[in-house]
Image 1 (tube, rainbow, N blue to C red):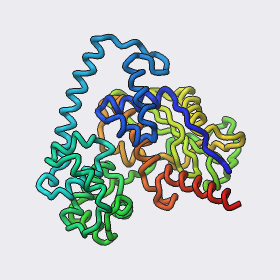
Image 2 (image 1 turned 90 degrees about the vertical axis):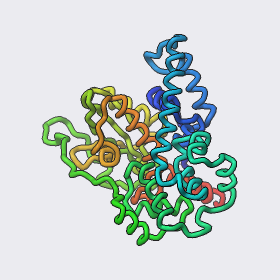
Image 3 (image 1 turned 90 degrees about the horizontal axis):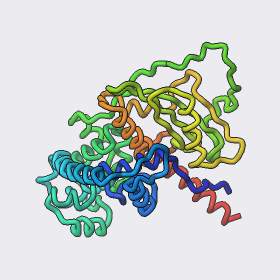
Image 4 (image 1 turned 45 degrees about the vertical axis):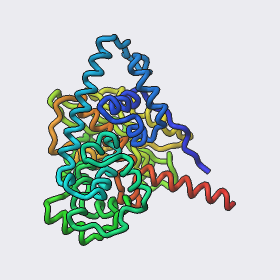
Amino acid sequence: MKKIPKQEYTAEFKALAVKRVKDGLTVGAAARELGLIDQTLRNRVKATDAGKLNGAGTKPVTPEQMELTRARAEVIRLRRKVEIFKKSDGILCKGCAVKYAWIDTRRPYYALTEMCPVLAVSVSGYRAWKRGGKADRCRLTDAQMLALIRAIHDELKGAYGSPRMVLELRARGFSASKGRVERLMREHGIRARHKRKFKVTTDSKHKLPIAPNLPDRNFAPAAPNQVWTSDITYPWTDEGWLYLAVVLDLFNREGVGWSLKPRMTADIVTDVLTMAWFRRKPAPGVLHHSDRGSQGGFNSFKNERVHGWRFATREDMTATAFEYIEVFYNRKRLHSTLGYKSPTLFLQDWLTAQQMEKRVA
């Protein structure tokens, strides 16, 4: 039986994981969304505060910088309180059950101690509601269903149309019919972010040496770490272009490696492959297929996170790319090619099936 080795992470990944905590997420919430152990992330936060997080260019933190960090944390806390108030518009006048359901959709982003006071409910009440069984014990009204759809639409930044929204609602324990969800989304103008026409930018008409196409369009491998594919895209920011290289394992469409650079230099290729190797440690023989002019394998990032938004800095774009790949795409996004499962869940199900087969044998 094939196993996925214990993952190791590059300094780039560690720094961006810590940044999510610094930006206001609790350690527990950030660890859950990234598939990390709480204490591991907590140790990385402490190492960052001490100026000792592994990675080139890290400098010791002075007392003045620590005080500035605390002041910034307070500003972020107040800003998040305002965000919760704005995003819960339409929920404040609803009953406790609807408030608890809304809170449940936002837990990856806000702590219970942040949300419950704003919505005038108690943490103990929410936990009692969670212990009481599935959320669909009674049929939600259209107003309640609409509130949930809007909350999920906001949480996923408009990535889902009605088909995936139906599956997402059901996965969260709510009874949802295709026709009802379609009607509510249509009547209230809730729609997925539109896909933009793809423009070929890769120059395939050159006389440079080209490696043979070993996968030969066989993009449905039977196990992990058999075929990887890579793609490079370049979103714009007010500071200039930012180049994003990604390596996907075609078995479960997981982004196993990525790198972000302000310039397209050779190290972006070595860095993305280094991250992929540390996370998967494949046996010899994995095929790596790079883009040669076909539609970008990671075009969904631009469609679902970039187009229609303005990014003031490369740092903002970097944080957005990290959230999209590590939090949403790998662990939440429902992929039609995977039977509407996330890459992480698809891989976990495969590993479980392998273990069962081994026991039977």
